[in-house]
Image (cartoon, chains in turn orange, yellow):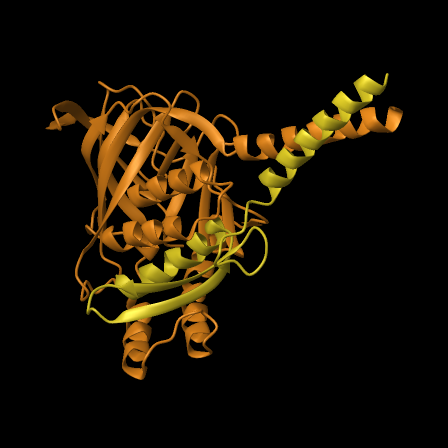
Length: 281
Length: 75
């Protein structure tokens, strides 16, 4: 009888544990969603032209997530379908990704006020075994210019400037939305940043819409396992070296895809030219 | 007491069955081992040429592998 009781309790705890692990990924619910257009030049010579990624900032009561719109959608699909491995879901996700304008330069998630208030956490998943996490608590020092203002999307905005990771930025933020947040790792102003760009115009985030999502829109933690914890500087090194590694994998047919000679050469040229990551050290 | 044992055993079976379902999702026809799927995906973009990806794993793992493959091939 005692054994039976023990098994009952153990079984209940196992169920509870599985439920808890999945629930941990649900960090918060979004109360505001800001969509941004991220325009950037992947190569510093601007020879490849500008690239656009559609990004979203999900703001919750306790934390926020900034990521590609398509990743937020795909994460939700995978999360709600997590107990059923469905090949049709994979096809749907692939189609979503192909039809989107996601890019290697913007395939990250930036969490603010996570894991604790005041923390910034950056996650980049390159493949199932290559998860990188960066705890990045460098405070951005802003200079607010009270003499300048403009209107973006109907919101009155003030100007602020900063120097961050090798680039000089101009930001426009609004006190009408008194939330200290913004695209990418930019925050620390008394209002939401609606537009920010560097003086050379290599990287620019501009808001395209702000809306209240339907109740219960989840803010999910990316499904990270055995994350490599690195510094922001080391992450940039990894980012570039990994591009070369990926190419070598392709050559050795270890990437799971096969390419013709011409396509391989084209891909190498493309990878080599991608030298203009947003952070410079 | 016997009645209690019977009810307890039934409850235990229900719990265990749920546990196994939760930890090992049902295999699909395409799977090579329980809880995994094996997929062949043709990534068609840009110039119209298709790139074939083959991989096995959970939906999350396959999706994580495909994410950057698509970015490399299609952007």
